[in-house]
Image (cartoon, rainbow, N blue to C red; front, side, top):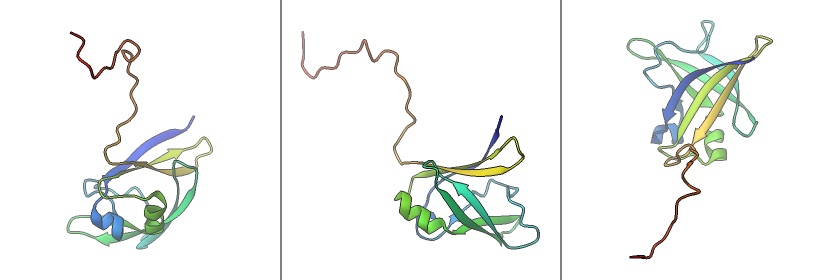
Length: 131
């Protein structure tokens, strides 16, 4: 059985769309091991099963290092036609063999998760007054 862990959720800003994706500042500890380097490449799979090679760079902030995703990100934005306000969810799954696979999910602005309405079969829709 695979173990899944949420890494971060980010509502996209203009900078995220036009330049780079900054990992949310509330993420105090980076989920990537840079091994003392300032750049690491990570393979990430999207909802369509396509693999993306993203380059994460570590930049320094006042209190802690802050990673940003640059390489490969703009191509992902263009392919998915992302817009300001869309949300990305990044997580990893630990497979049985110990391999860690990263995933990215896109949620469009204004799109809510589908929820089953158990009363839908009994509902009657009408735009006329039946009194």
